Length: 435
Image (cartoon, rainbow, N blue to C red):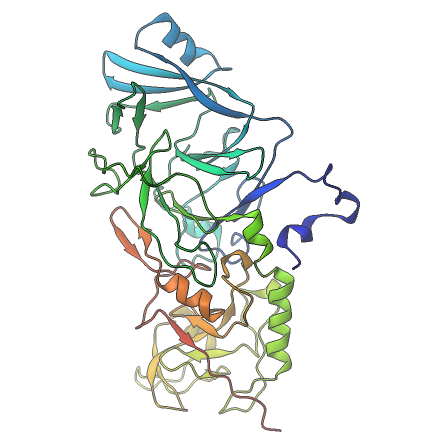
């Protein structure tokens, strides 16, 4: 099958010596193919991790007690990676890290400083522009986490909480949860934590939700704290690993990332495949069962702009119509399309079956990496109206995504809106042409 990464490779660079090995990609949930105002530089909706020309990974080496000359030197040396654990005002333990020729390191966080490879900001559900997110007090750490990928097969990716700053240091202050391990090493948790969930049966048609865990600075796995920033750590889960698998979810307390391996992406529908499915639906000439006008999904490039032929759906029953302005339950007033878009939760009565509920425009899910299979888009999330395949809708409706500091709820992967209704999605009922 044509793989997504092939779309970005020119024919002249297809030899294995010229194309770097791709480890995988990270996608931010809540964006339908790109950030609202477009992807720019290191701030974008997805980030590709490929083998670097030269390894930049690090691994722990020497442990220094506080106030020693070696500890001070490790912290001040900008060529030396280190992690400082402040136990009290007079006691700090510094762990030196040394170069690792076998791994590549990628860092993720809110900071725009050069050590951060992938700049991630808080996801605001349903936001249409980057300005929608600016007033939000961020809960994402400036240096949130790091991923280390093995440079040789099977290219295992491992995640660790916290990232190194511009001075190549990680500082865990007095208030951060930290402890000495049984083998004399140090470990700790970041303020709001880095949570990971590995789906059962991978990211396939048979995928089922896994269990959310917290990852420590040294990559150990723990049960969740009572709240995100609680001082008391959870219990260590020795049977589980920080190794990322296809479909692993990483929550940074403000944004959730999806990890897709290069192998997993090769089985995922491409943007070209989704475009072909869109054209196939439109070629069938679905009609509004009341107005008898032909409906059509707008092009993928116009994924946020309403169109005259835009399909609309009654989320209570799934009947697909063209836009019309009758059936409102609020004073039986006639609405215009702009007003309907501004107040998408208004209750309307379906002319086909008399079921009452929200009436919203349908939008194709354009981020191919969120799909579990290549089946046609037959289901829509409620209440946002993003359309995808049945198994994709079922999977995401079952995933409890972290929200705030201690709650979880299922959300649409394309816009991050909390799902509503009995299932969180509805099967679409199209009417074919009468001729």
